[in-house]
Image 1 (tube, each protein chain N blue to C red):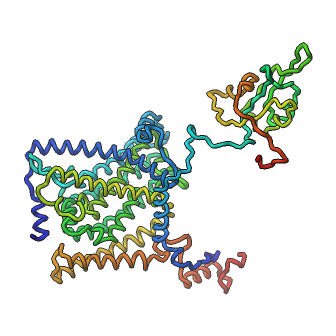
Image 2 (cartoon, each protein chain N blue to C red):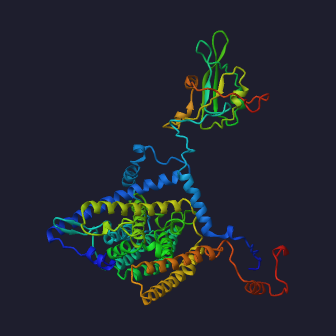
Length: 428
Length: 165
């Protein structure tokens, strides 16, 4: 058996198709992916309602075509509803904002590899819309754009609740963007490449990143929830405080576009989690799907596995949404800045040190001792984070923990004439 | 900070966010796969309503199809919402009967006093709740409509059997 690196090179090499088949297949992939994606997003609105219903011991939508046609009914309703424009809104931006929220979620899909390549009679067809060499950087760039739609929607509505929602979302997304970017650096350290198909192949030939880098996956998961404005981080649209947040003033299809954008973002984040940490389209426990011959059957099988992984994360999104209550704003910010960011930075240092050490000890990448070392480190990190540190400080409860000296100082400031500290029983 | 916040030291089982989250997710997952549902599939299934349910009115009739009402005027007098309109008439034998008997179901507060006060057991509140109409005028029920209703009527509160058993 040859080394994994040689296998990797053999797996990725292939004949480029000629220009005409390339154009035809790219167009086909575009149409198919776009259609499946949009229909899937529509069905996800139904899935969300069904799952929420089942979790709450209800039936969920079951009237329009046994429930299956509910998304179509909702779509028709949103198309024929009246569009309202607030009198003082900035109309051009008001109209532009839903599209700005929607497009980045779609564009991200261009670089995500969704199946094994297919060696067709006309040459190799990569199962990704745009096999971009800088795929991962492209995703980081585009996912930061999604925030503009929300901020512009909040500002152009000329509504204080919408503006507050937009402000919150910008603060939240910028905070978690950093932790998200930092959490993926260990992945890049292991793969040594920013091409997503290379990251997938590296995981297929070695181990899935979630086993080596659980903490990075955890940070990415939390940050992805915050990035997509899903519970428990849906503060931009906290209805008890902000009506509906940034889309308070939107109606009909423009509102629906925000709704679709939320689900599209969710699917994209799920696909990213599957790609970066769960081996993308890789079928576990076998290497046959990654090696030649790349038949159409393998492509279909890997596509199925990729879909299953994505759907699992989508389900996780919904499951968590109907389980956890919303965070308070200060909890959200302290989790992002005080926990996730230092954790991500520390984790980069730990992983980089481990990789350099293992390299120096002469363990080759992909060899058993290399990954055993990483997994041991990972188990230790998981125990430290989830068992030892989890003492009511990770998510602070309603009170803040001050040390005794700080409490005494604050009490002395607020009651200068008294010598003894005030007690609640003193009736002051 | 002058209010002196009391910080309670709690055991880890109560302060751990990770454990609370996992417990909650296990709980919701259990319910996700529970086949028992609490929903009543309304138009097909209906909840049974109490025997003392007070809904829209019904005027009972005699065997020959006339209203039992003798237009004594007790029900418009007792009605706290003033929703019963009664114009009494008298036939050749001197029997009183209602020329006009209208109940505005929008004004009615469904207290059931009209049924309770009626000496002839003519007007009743009904065990019925599906009353949708396309216009507000449709909620003013005239005598014909009240007599045409077929739903069961309320069994009033009986002091000897307070729980309705």
